[in-house]
Image 1: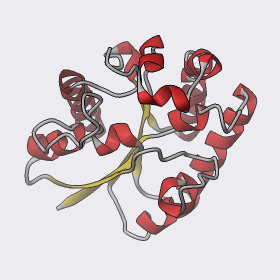
Image 2: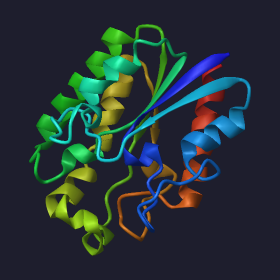
Image 3: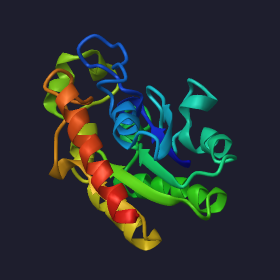
Image 4: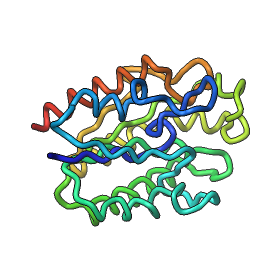
Length: 204
């Protein structure tokens, strides 16, 4: 059986913006992917709330993408799907657009180093909405975070093009929820799963 790794942040984990719980296997896109692909692929769900890509997260190893990723890549995967980077825009990290680009390039250089045969799919995250200021996450993100989130899609596009990765720009298909402006509602998880399945079919 072929294997897929889904690596990312809270939107890969399946964070429910309504109550902070984890969406069940009938809602979160990683589990929907398993349900859709059935016995063709085995899905490894490797999402983590508050995980950054390149910024050193004080919460520890599992929350810092570039540090924990090599542990996952000890296993060989046919396909790796990444949804990560939005947490690096938190105000505490104060990343400029240039440093964001450099950081994401650093992250994906690790992918190239540790995984030479996997096919890669990158999900470019949706922009953060102003609704975030009505939620708990206003402690982490500010106006600059929102503005930067509107300008990072070209970074993902550049990395995908240079490395011949597949890119799904989620801004073209869906948007973050109106609850917290950062996470996805159930219907949005269905859309994400559908677009990933379409992409995987193109790879085969």
